[in-house]
Picture 1 (cartoon, rainbow, N blue to C red):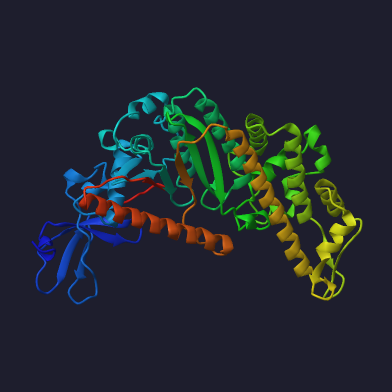
Picture 2: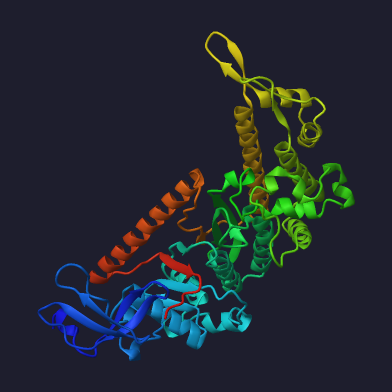
Length: 496
C-alpha cells in the first residue's frame, strides 16, 4: 500500500494550529486525483487542503488509539512531531508518567512538582533489572549504565540535554543518587554526601534567574564517578565548562546575576561580614541591570546559610569561606567605582572614591595602582613601554573584564576545592560519567557565551547521531557494546 492510499475517508490526521500547535482531524472523503483533502477538525471546523499542486503537504497521520500512551516511542506506527508530542502528553496527563523511552533515549518531562519516584524502595526495584523490564525511569538508564560497566568493563556516560528549565540538573542528581546507592561500599555514602553537598555551592555560584527558569544553570558540568575493581564508588571528579562570565557584569531584562551575590547581600548584617562593607542589593550596579533583584518564594538569606553549611561539609574552612566572600564583595564594589571623563580621550577616578578604596582593600591590592591601571593601558614594544590613557568607555570595558576574570578564577578555585574533597588514593578501575549541559539558546541580545553553548550542543547532536548510526551497524553485524546513554528532558508538553 502506498502512502497516498492511506488517505481515505475516516483516516485520522494532524493539522498545524496557531493556538494549540497541532489539532486532530478526520478525512470526510477519500483523497482523489484532484488532490483535494476535506478534513473535519476536532473543534468542529472544516478545512480543505490542496496537496497535489505543491501548495500544501500531506498532513501527518495519527497513530491507532491502541498505540497511544506506549512507553517507548519507537513502537508507534508514525513517529513524527505531533505523534511524539501527543504520546508524551497522554502519558503525562492520564498516567502522571514523566518518563518515556525512545530506543536508548529516555525522554523526561519536568512536572514542576515533587513526585514520589526516587525513594530507596524505587531504587531497590530497579536495581538488577534490564531497561525493558521496568517502566521508563532515570533509574533504569542508570542501572543499565552500571550493569554495562560491570559486564563489559567499559566506561559509560549519560548525556543529559534539554532547554533551560527542563530539569536537567535534577535528573543528573537522581542518576548520581542511584549510583551512590548501588555502589555497595561503605565509603560511597560519604562521597554521595559530599557530591550532594556540592549542589548548593554550585547552584549559588553557577546558577541565576533567567526569563525561562528561576534557577538556571549557567555552566556545563561533567561528573565522573570512579569505581574500584569491585565496582564500589571510591571517588568523584567534577569538570565544568562554558561558565557564563558576562552575567557577572550584565543581565538582560527580568534576569539576575548569580545567586551568591544576592545571598551575600542578604547576609550583610552578619558580624563576621561587616568588613565587606556591603549593603542592600539595590545599591550595587552589577545586581540591578535586569531590574529583577528578587525571585518569588526564594529567601536569599536562607540560601546563604545553606551554602555555608555545604561548604563546611565539603571541607572549605571558615577562613577560606571569608576569603571567598571578600572576593565576591570586591567584585561588587568594582562595579560601583565612579569612572569620570578627564577629557575626550582620558578618564579618571576620584582618590576618595569609597568603592575604589573598599575594592582595593578587599582584594589586597594597592589603591593607587588599581586606580592607575583602571584608567590606563600598558603597551610594550621592542624598544619601549608606553602608557596609553583610556577614555570612559574603554575604562569601563576594562573594569568589566577584570570583574569577569576574577569571578571566573574564583569559580575554578571553588570547583577545585570540591574535587579535592571528593578524591581518594584508591586506583580507579572504571567510571560512570554524567554530562549536564544547557541546551540551545537564543536571546534578543546574544553574547559569545551563546555562540559557545550552541556550538557545544551541535557537537553533542553530532555525537548522538554517530552513536545511533553505530548502533544500527552493530545490530546488523550482531555486535553490541554500547557505552552511551542519552536523557532528554522537556518542559510541560501540551497538545489539543
